[in-house]
Length: 261
Length: 278
Image 1: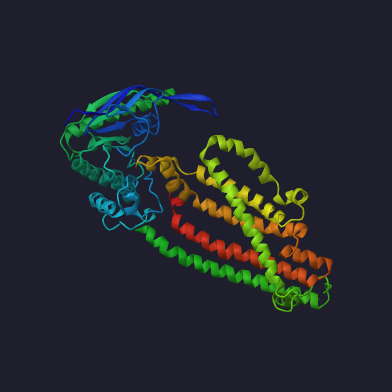
Image 2: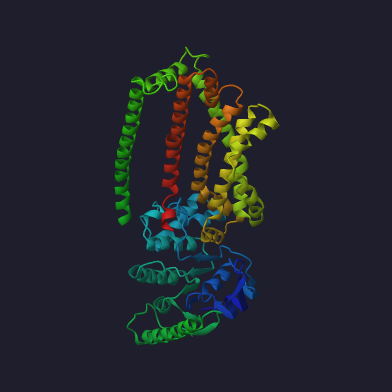
Protein backbone atom coordinates (compact mmCIF):
# COMPACT_ATOMS: atom_id res chain seq x y z
CA UNK A 1 0.00 0.00 0.00
CA UNK A 2 1.35 3.40 -0.89
CA UNK A 3 1.66 5.95 1.87
CA UNK A 4 0.32 8.82 -0.22
CA UNK A 5 -1.83 10.99 1.99
CA UNK A 6 -5.32 11.45 0.54
CA UNK A 7 -7.16 13.33 3.26
CA UNK A 8 -5.51 15.33 5.97
CA UNK A 9 -7.22 17.23 8.77
CA UNK A 10 -5.21 19.67 10.86
CA UNK A 11 -6.49 21.26 14.05
CA UNK A 12 -10.11 21.02 12.86
CA UNK A 13 -12.71 22.62 15.04
CA UNK A 14 -16.39 22.95 14.20
CA UNK A 15 -18.91 25.08 16.02
CA UNK A 16 -22.57 25.02 15.05
CA UNK A 17 -24.55 28.10 15.84
CA UNK A 18 -28.29 27.80 16.28
CA UNK A 19 -29.86 31.12 15.32
CA UNK A 20 -33.19 30.42 16.91
CA UNK A 21 -31.92 29.59 20.38
CA UNK A 22 -28.77 31.67 19.88
CA UNK A 23 -26.63 28.87 21.31
CA UNK A 24 -23.43 27.45 19.99
CA UNK A 25 -22.47 23.80 20.06
CA UNK A 26 -18.93 22.65 19.60
CA UNK A 27 -19.23 19.51 17.47
CA UNK A 28 -15.54 18.88 16.90
CA UNK A 29 -12.61 20.24 18.86
CA UNK A 30 -9.07 20.01 17.58
CA UNK A 31 -9.08 17.01 15.29
CA UNK A 32 -6.00 15.76 13.44
CA UNK A 33 -6.29 12.85 11.05
CA UNK A 34 -4.58 11.51 7.95
CA UNK A 35 -6.12 9.02 5.54
CA UNK A 36 -3.82 7.31 3.07
CA UNK A 37 -4.34 6.18 -0.48
CA UNK A 38 -6.28 2.92 -0.74
CA UNK A 39 -7.08 2.80 2.95
CA UNK A 40 -10.45 1.66 4.24
CA UNK A 41 -10.96 3.84 7.31
CA UNK A 42 -13.98 3.37 9.54
CA UNK A 43 -15.01 6.23 11.80
CA UNK A 44 -16.99 4.94 14.74
CA UNK A 45 -18.42 6.66 17.77
CA UNK A 46 -21.60 7.49 19.70
CA UNK A 47 -24.30 9.38 17.81
CA UNK A 48 -23.80 13.12 17.72
CA UNK A 49 -20.04 12.76 18.11
CA UNK A 50 -19.24 14.70 14.97
CA UNK A 51 -18.13 11.81 12.78
CA UNK A 52 -20.69 12.60 10.09
CA UNK A 53 -19.82 16.29 10.34
CA UNK A 54 -16.20 15.40 9.69
CA UNK A 55 -17.24 13.25 6.72
CA UNK A 56 -19.25 16.17 5.30
CA UNK A 57 -16.13 18.32 5.59
CA UNK A 58 -14.23 15.76 3.53
CA UNK A 59 -17.07 15.86 0.99
CA UNK A 60 -17.03 19.67 0.95
CA UNK A 61 -20.58 20.19 2.27
CA UNK A 62 -19.44 21.67 5.57
CA UNK A 63 -16.38 23.69 6.45
CA UNK A 64 -14.31 23.79 9.62
CA UNK A 65 -14.64 26.80 11.90
CA UNK A 66 -10.93 26.56 12.56
CA UNK A 67 -8.22 24.41 11.04
CA UNK A 68 -8.10 22.83 7.64
CA UNK A 69 -9.27 19.70 5.79
CA UNK A 70 -7.30 18.95 2.64
CA UNK A 71 -7.60 16.44 -0.17
CA UNK A 72 -4.36 15.54 -1.96
CA UNK A 73 -2.71 18.50 -0.30
CA UNK A 74 -5.34 21.06 -1.37
CA UNK A 75 -7.81 22.60 1.06
CA UNK A 76 -11.32 21.35 0.29
CA UNK A 77 -13.48 24.21 -0.99
CA UNK A 78 -16.62 22.33 -2.02
CA UNK A 79 -18.00 19.02 -3.30
CA UNK A 80 -16.48 17.39 -6.34
CA UNK A 81 -16.77 14.16 -8.33
CA UNK A 82 -13.31 13.00 -7.19
CA UNK A 83 -14.84 12.51 -3.73
CA UNK A 84 -18.00 10.44 -4.08
CA UNK A 85 -20.60 10.21 -1.31
CA UNK A 86 -23.10 7.55 -0.26
CA UNK A 87 -25.82 8.57 2.19
CA UNK A 88 -27.76 6.51 4.69
CA UNK A 89 -31.06 7.35 2.98
CA UNK A 90 -29.87 6.42 -0.56
CA UNK A 91 -30.94 9.73 -2.15
CA UNK A 92 -31.91 8.36 -5.54
CA UNK A 93 -33.83 10.49 -8.02
CA UNK A 94 -37.29 8.91 -8.23
CA UNK A 95 -37.96 10.10 -11.77
CA UNK A 96 -34.92 8.27 -13.13
CA UNK A 97 -34.57 4.55 -13.72
CA UNK A 98 -31.79 2.57 -12.04
CA UNK A 99 -29.58 2.92 -15.11
CA UNK A 100 -30.25 6.63 -15.46
CA UNK A 101 -29.49 7.18 -11.79
CA UNK A 102 -26.18 5.44 -12.25
CA UNK A 103 -25.22 7.29 -15.44
CA UNK A 104 -26.07 10.65 -13.85
CA UNK A 105 -22.50 11.52 -12.85
CA UNK A 106 -21.20 10.52 -16.26
CA UNK A 107 -23.86 12.64 -17.98
CA UNK A 108 -22.75 15.59 -15.89
CA UNK A 109 -19.16 14.97 -16.99
CA UNK A 110 -20.36 15.16 -20.58
CA UNK A 111 -19.95 11.48 -21.44
CA UNK A 112 -22.20 10.55 -24.37
CA UNK A 113 -25.36 8.66 -23.44
CA UNK A 114 -24.44 5.36 -25.07
CA UNK A 115 -20.91 5.38 -23.71
CA UNK A 116 -22.27 6.25 -20.26
CA UNK A 117 -24.74 3.36 -20.41
CA UNK A 118 -21.93 1.01 -21.41
CA UNK A 119 -19.71 2.12 -18.55
CA UNK A 120 -22.61 2.01 -16.08
CA UNK A 121 -23.22 -1.61 -17.00
CA UNK A 122 -19.90 -2.60 -15.44
CA UNK A 123 -21.00 -1.18 -12.10
CA UNK A 124 -24.50 -2.57 -12.46
CA UNK A 125 -23.00 -6.04 -12.81
CA UNK A 126 -20.45 -5.55 -10.04
CA UNK A 127 -23.04 -4.37 -7.52
CA UNK A 128 -25.50 -7.14 -8.41
CA UNK A 129 -28.13 -4.98 -10.05
CA UNK A 130 -28.35 -6.85 -13.35
CA UNK A 131 -31.96 -7.25 -14.43
CA UNK A 132 -33.10 -4.11 -12.57
CA UNK A 133 -31.66 -1.53 -14.98
CA UNK A 134 -35.04 -0.26 -16.09
CA UNK A 135 -36.76 -0.34 -12.71
CA UNK A 136 -37.57 2.82 -10.83
CA UNK A 137 -36.20 3.34 -7.30
CA UNK A 138 -39.67 2.95 -5.77
CA UNK A 139 -39.80 -0.62 -7.06
CA UNK A 140 -36.62 -1.61 -5.19
CA UNK A 141 -35.96 -2.78 -1.64
CA UNK A 142 -33.71 -0.74 0.66
CA UNK A 143 -30.67 -2.89 0.00
CA UNK A 144 -31.11 -2.63 -3.76
CA UNK A 145 -31.53 1.13 -3.53
CA UNK A 146 -28.27 1.41 -1.65
CA UNK A 147 -26.57 -0.71 -4.33
CA UNK A 148 -27.78 1.80 -6.90
CA UNK A 149 -26.39 4.67 -4.85
CA UNK A 150 -23.03 2.92 -4.49
CA UNK A 151 -22.90 2.10 -8.20
CA UNK A 152 -23.79 5.69 -9.04
CA UNK A 153 -20.91 6.97 -6.94
CA UNK A 154 -18.40 4.43 -8.28
CA UNK A 155 -19.41 5.01 -11.91
CA UNK A 156 -17.93 8.51 -11.60
CA UNK A 157 -14.62 6.83 -10.81
CA UNK A 158 -13.89 8.95 -7.76
CA UNK A 159 -10.52 8.95 -6.05
CA UNK A 160 -12.19 8.39 -2.72
CA UNK A 161 -15.61 7.27 -1.51
CA UNK A 162 -17.21 8.75 1.59
CA UNK A 163 -19.95 6.66 3.17
CA UNK A 164 -22.27 8.02 5.83
CA UNK A 165 -23.77 5.07 7.73
CA UNK A 166 -24.67 3.51 4.38
CA UNK A 167 -26.21 0.39 5.86
CA UNK A 168 -27.87 2.10 8.82
CA UNK A 169 -31.35 1.94 7.29
CA UNK A 170 -31.19 -1.73 6.31
CA UNK A 171 -32.27 -4.85 8.17
CA UNK A 172 -29.63 -7.13 9.67
CA UNK A 173 -29.55 -9.82 6.97
CA UNK A 174 -29.35 -7.29 4.17
CA UNK A 175 -26.62 -5.50 6.08
CA UNK A 176 -24.45 -8.62 6.28
CA UNK A 177 -24.93 -9.15 2.58
CA UNK A 178 -24.02 -5.56 1.77
CA UNK A 179 -20.93 -5.64 3.99
CA UNK A 180 -19.68 -8.72 2.19
CA UNK A 181 -20.38 -7.24 -1.24
CA UNK A 182 -18.84 -3.88 -0.41
CA UNK A 183 -15.68 -5.67 0.65
CA UNK A 184 -15.58 -7.43 -2.69
CA UNK A 185 -16.10 -4.18 -4.57
CA UNK A 186 -13.37 -2.53 -2.52
CA UNK A 187 -10.99 -5.41 -3.24
CA UNK A 188 -11.57 -4.89 -6.94
CA UNK A 189 -11.32 -1.13 -7.03
CA UNK A 190 -8.83 -0.40 -4.24
CA UNK A 191 -10.43 2.99 -3.60
CA UNK A 192 -9.78 5.07 -0.53
CA UNK A 193 -12.89 4.78 1.62
CA UNK A 194 -13.97 6.68 4.70
CA UNK A 195 -16.91 4.87 6.23
CA UNK A 196 -18.95 6.29 9.11
CA UNK A 197 -20.93 3.87 11.25
CA UNK A 198 -21.93 3.07 14.77
CA UNK A 199 -21.95 -0.65 14.11
CA UNK A 200 -19.02 -2.49 15.66
CA UNK A 201 -19.65 -5.44 13.32
CA UNK A 202 -19.34 -3.33 10.19
CA UNK A 203 -16.14 -1.76 11.49
CA UNK A 204 -14.51 -5.10 12.24
CA UNK A 205 -15.50 -6.71 8.96
CA UNK A 206 -14.48 -3.85 6.71
CA UNK A 207 -11.76 -1.66 8.18
CA UNK A 208 -8.03 -1.40 7.63
CA UNK A 209 -8.12 1.13 10.34
CA UNK A 210 -10.75 2.01 12.92
CA UNK A 211 -10.83 5.54 14.28
CA UNK A 212 -12.86 5.75 17.49
CA UNK A 213 -14.45 9.14 18.13
CA UNK A 214 -15.24 10.32 21.65
CA UNK A 215 -18.46 12.04 22.66
CA UNK A 216 -19.03 15.70 21.90
CA UNK A 217 -16.97 17.80 21.55
CA UNK A 218 -15.33 15.20 19.46
CA UNK A 219 -11.75 14.12 19.64
CA UNK A 220 -10.07 10.94 18.52
CA UNK A 221 -10.07 8.42 21.28
CA UNK A 222 -8.25 5.59 19.61
CA UNK A 223 -6.82 4.77 16.21
CA UNK A 224 -6.65 1.01 15.68
CA UNK A 225 -4.93 -0.69 12.76
CA UNK A 226 -6.74 -3.88 11.74
CA UNK A 227 -4.54 -6.14 9.69
CA UNK A 228 -6.12 -9.56 9.91
CA UNK A 229 -6.83 -11.15 6.56
CA UNK A 230 -10.19 -10.93 4.82
CA UNK A 231 -12.82 -12.17 4.61
CA UNK A 232 -12.99 -12.09 8.36
CA UNK A 233 -15.09 -14.49 10.39
CA UNK A 234 -16.80 -13.66 13.63
CA UNK A 235 -15.51 -16.75 15.39
CA UNK A 236 -11.86 -15.75 14.92
CA UNK A 237 -10.40 -15.06 18.43
CA UNK A 238 -8.59 -11.95 17.14
CA UNK A 239 -11.88 -10.59 15.81
CA UNK A 240 -13.59 -11.32 19.11
CA UNK A 241 -10.86 -9.58 21.08
CA UNK A 242 -11.15 -6.52 18.85
CA UNK A 243 -14.91 -6.51 19.23
CA UNK A 244 -14.62 -6.61 23.01
CA UNK A 245 -12.15 -3.74 22.91
CA UNK A 246 -14.38 -1.60 20.68
CA UNK A 247 -17.48 -2.27 22.71
CA UNK A 248 -15.58 -1.25 25.80
CA UNK A 249 -14.33 1.97 24.24
CA UNK A 250 -17.79 2.90 23.01
CA UNK A 251 -19.55 1.96 26.24
CA UNK A 252 -17.17 4.25 28.06
CA UNK A 253 -18.18 7.12 25.83
CA UNK A 254 -21.87 6.49 26.17
CA UNK A 255 -21.52 6.41 29.94
CA UNK A 256 -19.74 9.78 29.93
CA UNK A 257 -22.42 11.12 27.69
CA UNK A 258 -25.29 10.01 29.90
CA UNK A 259 -23.66 11.39 33.05
CA UNK A 260 -22.80 14.67 31.39
CA UNK A 261 -26.11 15.06 29.57
CA UNK B 1 -41.37 -8.31 -3.95
CA UNK B 2 -44.11 -7.01 -1.69
CA UNK B 3 -44.31 -3.66 -3.40
CA UNK B 4 -45.50 -5.06 -6.68
CA UNK B 5 -48.33 -6.81 -4.86
CA UNK B 6 -49.65 -3.63 -3.28
CA UNK B 7 -49.24 -1.87 -6.57
CA UNK B 8 -51.44 -4.42 -8.23
CA UNK B 9 -54.10 -4.24 -5.54
CA UNK B 10 -54.39 -0.48 -5.12
CA UNK B 11 -55.71 0.50 -8.54
CA UNK B 12 -58.40 -2.15 -8.36
CA UNK B 13 -59.59 -0.97 -4.98
CA UNK B 14 -59.34 2.63 -6.08
CA UNK B 15 -61.42 2.28 -9.22
CA UNK B 16 -63.99 0.34 -7.24
CA UNK B 17 -64.13 3.18 -4.75
CA UNK B 18 -64.44 5.81 -7.47
CA UNK B 19 -67.36 4.07 -9.14
CA UNK B 20 -69.16 3.77 -5.79
CA UNK B 21 -68.42 7.42 -5.12
CA UNK B 22 -69.65 8.41 -8.54
CA UNK B 23 -72.84 6.41 -8.16
CA UNK B 24 -73.55 7.88 -4.73
CA UNK B 25 -72.80 11.40 -5.96
CA UNK B 26 -75.00 11.03 -9.03
CA UNK B 27 -77.86 9.68 -6.88
CA UNK B 28 -77.72 12.74 -4.61
CA UNK B 29 -77.77 15.11 -7.57
CA UNK B 30 -80.67 13.33 -9.27
CA UNK B 31 -82.75 13.24 -6.07
CA UNK B 32 -82.17 16.94 -5.47
CA UNK B 33 -83.07 17.89 -9.04
CA UNK B 34 -86.27 15.82 -8.92
CA UNK B 35 -87.21 17.36 -5.56
CA UNK B 36 -86.59 20.83 -6.94
CA UNK B 37 -88.84 20.09 -9.92
CA UNK B 38 -91.63 18.75 -7.67
CA UNK B 39 -91.45 21.60 -5.18
CA UNK B 40 -91.79 24.17 -7.96
CA UNK B 41 -94.46 22.28 -9.89
CA UNK B 42 -96.78 21.87 -6.94
CA UNK B 43 -96.45 25.59 -6.27
CA UNK B 44 -94.52 25.59 -3.00
CA UNK B 45 -92.08 28.01 -4.62
CA UNK B 46 -92.87 30.75 -7.12
CA UNK B 47 -91.85 29.37 -10.50
CA UNK B 48 -90.97 32.83 -11.74
CA UNK B 49 -88.35 33.43 -9.01
CA UNK B 50 -87.12 29.84 -9.02
CA UNK B 51 -87.79 28.17 -12.35
CA UNK B 52 -87.88 24.36 -12.31
CA UNK B 53 -84.83 22.42 -13.59
CA UNK B 54 -86.56 21.44 -16.84
CA UNK B 55 -87.00 25.12 -17.68
CA UNK B 56 -83.45 25.96 -16.60
CA UNK B 57 -81.95 23.26 -18.79
CA UNK B 58 -84.08 24.12 -21.78
CA UNK B 59 -82.99 27.76 -21.33
CA UNK B 60 -79.37 26.54 -21.19
CA UNK B 61 -79.87 24.77 -24.54
CA UNK B 62 -81.60 27.79 -26.04
CA UNK B 63 -78.71 30.03 -24.99
CA UNK B 64 -76.27 27.61 -26.54
CA UNK B 65 -78.17 27.44 -29.79
CA UNK B 66 -78.78 29.70 -32.82
CA UNK B 67 -82.01 31.25 -31.45
CA UNK B 68 -80.17 32.95 -28.63
CA UNK B 69 -79.52 36.70 -28.74
CA UNK B 70 -76.86 36.99 -30.03
CA UNK B 71 -76.72 33.54 -31.58
CA UNK B 72 -74.78 30.97 -29.55
CA UNK B 73 -74.46 33.55 -26.75
CA UNK B 74 -73.65 30.97 -24.08
CA UNK B 75 -70.53 29.84 -25.89
CA UNK B 76 -69.34 33.39 -26.26
CA UNK B 77 -69.86 34.02 -22.57
CA UNK B 78 -67.99 30.85 -21.67
CA UNK B 79 -65.26 31.67 -24.18
CA UNK B 80 -64.70 35.15 -22.80
CA UNK B 81 -64.65 33.93 -19.23
CA UNK B 82 -62.15 31.21 -20.07
CA UNK B 83 -60.00 33.63 -22.03
CA UNK B 84 -59.82 35.98 -19.03
CA UNK B 85 -59.12 33.06 -16.72
CA UNK B 86 -56.31 31.67 -18.83
CA UNK B 87 -54.78 35.09 -19.45
CA UNK B 88 -54.96 35.94 -15.75
CA UNK B 89 -53.50 32.65 -14.57
CA UNK B 90 -50.71 32.81 -17.16
CA UNK B 91 -49.85 36.35 -16.12
CA UNK B 92 -50.00 35.35 -12.46
CA UNK B 93 -47.71 32.38 -13.08
CA UNK B 94 -45.26 34.53 -14.99
CA UNK B 95 -45.02 36.84 -11.99
CA UNK B 96 -45.56 34.45 -9.09
CA UNK B 97 -43.39 31.50 -10.11
CA UNK B 98 -40.08 33.36 -10.45
CA UNK B 99 -40.72 35.21 -7.19
CA UNK B 100 -41.60 31.99 -5.34
CA UNK B 101 -38.63 30.10 -6.74
CA UNK B 102 -36.30 32.97 -5.87
CA UNK B 103 -37.79 33.04 -2.35
CA UNK B 104 -37.18 29.34 -1.99
CA UNK B 105 -33.59 29.62 -3.09
CA UNK B 106 -32.45 32.78 -1.33
CA UNK B 107 -32.98 33.81 2.26
CA UNK B 108 -32.71 37.53 1.64
CA UNK B 109 -35.36 37.46 -1.09
CA UNK B 110 -37.55 35.26 1.08
CA UNK B 111 -37.46 37.69 3.99
CA UNK B 112 -38.08 40.62 1.67
CA UNK B 113 -41.15 39.17 -0.05
CA UNK B 114 -42.65 37.33 2.93
CA UNK B 115 -44.60 40.31 4.34
CA UNK B 116 -46.03 41.19 0.93
CA UNK B 117 -47.12 37.62 0.37
CA UNK B 118 -48.62 37.30 3.85
CA UNK B 119 -50.58 40.51 3.30
CA UNK B 120 -51.90 39.45 -0.11
CA UNK B 121 -52.77 35.95 1.11
CA UNK B 122 -55.02 37.44 3.77
CA UNK B 123 -57.21 39.47 1.41
CA UNK B 124 -59.43 38.11 -1.35
CA UNK B 125 -58.14 39.71 -4.54
CA UNK B 126 -61.74 40.65 -5.32
CA UNK B 127 -61.41 43.30 -2.63
CA UNK B 128 -58.92 45.02 -4.91
CA UNK B 129 -61.46 45.28 -7.75
CA UNK B 130 -62.86 48.72 -6.76
CA UNK B 131 -59.37 50.22 -6.68
CA UNK B 132 -58.51 48.57 -9.98
CA UNK B 133 -61.70 49.92 -11.56
CA UNK B 134 -60.78 53.41 -10.40
CA UNK B 135 -57.26 52.98 -11.72
CA UNK B 136 -58.01 51.28 -15.02
CA UNK B 137 -61.59 52.26 -15.69
CA UNK B 138 -64.11 49.66 -16.77
CA UNK B 139 -61.50 47.87 -18.77
CA UNK B 140 -61.11 44.32 -19.95
CA UNK B 141 -57.94 44.24 -17.82
CA UNK B 142 -59.70 44.54 -14.48
CA UNK B 143 -60.91 40.90 -14.29
CA UNK B 144 -57.62 39.67 -15.74
CA UNK B 145 -55.65 41.64 -13.17
CA UNK B 146 -57.76 40.34 -10.30
CA UNK B 147 -57.12 36.77 -11.38
CA UNK B 148 -53.45 37.47 -12.03
CA UNK B 149 -52.98 38.77 -8.48
CA UNK B 150 -54.85 35.82 -7.02
CA UNK B 151 -52.79 33.36 -9.10
CA UNK B 152 -49.47 35.10 -8.48
CA UNK B 153 -49.92 34.85 -4.70
CA UNK B 154 -50.85 31.17 -4.79
CA UNK B 155 -48.05 30.37 -7.25
CA UNK B 156 -45.40 32.24 -5.28
CA UNK B 157 -46.48 30.62 -2.03
CA UNK B 158 -46.40 27.07 -3.41
CA UNK B 159 -43.25 27.56 -5.47
CA UNK B 160 -41.45 28.76 -2.35
CA UNK B 161 -42.74 25.77 -0.41
CA UNK B 162 -41.71 23.38 -3.18
CA UNK B 163 -38.23 24.71 -3.80
CA UNK B 164 -37.33 25.16 -0.14
CA UNK B 165 -38.53 21.70 0.89
CA UNK B 166 -36.15 19.77 -1.36
CA UNK B 167 -34.11 17.56 1.00
CA UNK B 168 -30.56 18.77 1.53
CA UNK B 169 -29.08 15.40 0.60
CA UNK B 170 -30.78 15.44 -2.82
CA UNK B 171 -28.81 18.57 -3.65
CA UNK B 172 -25.62 17.42 -1.98
CA UNK B 173 -25.59 14.09 -3.81
CA UNK B 174 -25.93 15.91 -7.12
CA UNK B 175 -23.19 18.37 -6.18
CA UNK B 176 -20.75 15.60 -5.40
CA UNK B 177 -21.46 14.02 -8.79
CA UNK B 178 -20.05 17.22 -10.22
CA UNK B 179 -23.16 19.32 -10.82
CA UNK B 180 -23.03 23.11 -10.82
CA UNK B 181 -25.54 25.15 -8.83
CA UNK B 182 -27.51 25.77 -11.99
CA UNK B 183 -27.61 22.07 -12.85
CA UNK B 184 -28.71 21.24 -9.32
CA UNK B 185 -31.52 23.71 -9.78
CA UNK B 186 -32.73 22.35 -13.11
CA UNK B 187 -32.21 18.66 -12.35
CA UNK B 188 -33.16 18.40 -8.70
CA UNK B 189 -34.95 21.46 -7.37
CA UNK B 190 -37.36 21.93 -10.28
CA UNK B 191 -38.43 18.29 -10.73
CA UNK B 192 -38.81 17.87 -6.98
CA UNK B 193 -41.08 20.91 -6.81
CA UNK B 194 -43.26 19.87 -9.72
CA UNK B 195 -46.08 18.41 -7.59
CA UNK B 196 -46.22 21.69 -5.64
CA UNK B 197 -46.41 23.66 -8.87
CA UNK B 198 -49.24 21.51 -10.22
CA UNK B 199 -51.15 22.05 -6.97
CA UNK B 200 -50.51 25.78 -7.29
CA UNK B 201 -51.86 25.79 -10.83
CA UNK B 202 -54.94 23.87 -9.78
CA UNK B 203 -55.64 26.20 -6.86
CA UNK B 204 -55.07 29.29 -9.00
CA UNK B 205 -57.55 28.10 -11.61
CA UNK B 206 -60.11 27.21 -8.91
CA UNK B 207 -59.79 30.46 -6.97
CA UNK B 208 -59.43 32.39 -10.22
CA UNK B 209 -62.66 31.00 -11.62
CA UNK B 210 -64.60 31.98 -8.53
CA UNK B 211 -63.09 35.46 -8.39
CA UNK B 212 -63.64 35.91 -12.12
CA UNK B 213 -67.38 35.37 -12.03
CA UNK B 214 -67.69 37.86 -9.20
CA UNK B 215 -65.52 40.47 -10.81
CA UNK B 216 -67.43 40.10 -14.09
CA UNK B 217 -70.54 41.14 -12.17
CA UNK B 218 -68.73 44.35 -11.31
CA UNK B 219 -66.54 45.13 -14.23
CA UNK B 220 -67.09 43.12 -17.38
CA UNK B 221 -67.75 45.31 -20.38
CA UNK B 222 -69.37 42.64 -22.53
CA UNK B 223 -69.71 38.87 -22.36
CA UNK B 224 -68.57 36.50 -19.64
CA UNK B 225 -70.72 34.20 -17.54
CA UNK B 226 -70.75 36.67 -14.64
CA UNK B 227 -71.79 39.44 -17.02
CA UNK B 228 -74.54 37.23 -18.42
CA UNK B 229 -76.03 36.70 -14.97
CA UNK B 230 -75.73 40.39 -14.11
CA UNK B 231 -77.50 41.38 -17.31
CA UNK B 232 -80.22 38.78 -16.74
CA UNK B 233 -80.83 40.27 -13.29
CA UNK B 234 -81.55 43.65 -14.91
CA UNK B 235 -84.19 42.00 -17.09
CA UNK B 236 -85.61 39.89 -14.24
CA UNK B 237 -84.64 36.89 -16.40
CA UNK B 238 -84.39 34.24 -13.67
CA UNK B 239 -84.21 31.39 -16.19
CA UNK B 240 -80.94 32.79 -17.57
CA UNK B 241 -79.58 33.45 -14.07
CA UNK B 242 -80.08 29.81 -13.14
CA UNK B 243 -78.79 28.61 -16.49
CA UNK B 244 -75.68 30.74 -15.87
CA UNK B 245 -75.13 29.22 -12.46
CA UNK B 246 -75.39 25.73 -13.91
CA UNK B 247 -72.96 26.65 -16.70
CA UNK B 248 -70.47 28.06 -14.18
CA UNK B 249 -70.52 24.92 -12.10
CA UNK B 250 -70.20 22.62 -15.13
CA UNK B 251 -67.18 24.52 -16.47
CA UNK B 252 -65.56 24.71 -13.01
CA UNK B 253 -66.14 21.03 -12.35
CA UNK B 254 -64.72 20.05 -15.72
CA UNK B 255 -61.56 22.00 -15.06
CA UNK B 256 -61.07 20.67 -11.56
CA UNK B 257 -61.79 17.02 -12.26
CA UNK B 258 -61.06 16.31 -15.86
CA UNK B 259 -58.12 18.60 -16.63
CA UNK B 260 -56.35 18.67 -13.28
CA UNK B 261 -57.42 15.27 -12.08
CA UNK B 262 -55.61 13.75 -15.03
CA UNK B 263 -52.59 16.04 -14.76
CA UNK B 264 -52.21 15.37 -11.05
CA UNK B 265 -52.49 11.61 -11.44
CA UNK B 266 -49.85 11.74 -14.17
CA UNK B 267 -47.38 13.76 -12.14
CA UNK B 268 -47.98 11.78 -8.99
CA UNK B 269 -47.43 8.49 -10.77
CA UNK B 270 -44.22 9.82 -12.23
CA UNK B 271 -42.85 11.39 -9.12
CA UNK B 272 -44.98 9.80 -6.58
CA UNK B 273 -43.85 7.41 -4.16
CA UNK B 274 -40.72 9.35 -3.38
CA UNK B 275 -42.80 11.30 -0.88
CA UNK B 276 -43.89 8.04 0.67
CA UNK B 277 -40.30 6.86 0.73
CA UNK B 278 -39.17 9.66 2.97
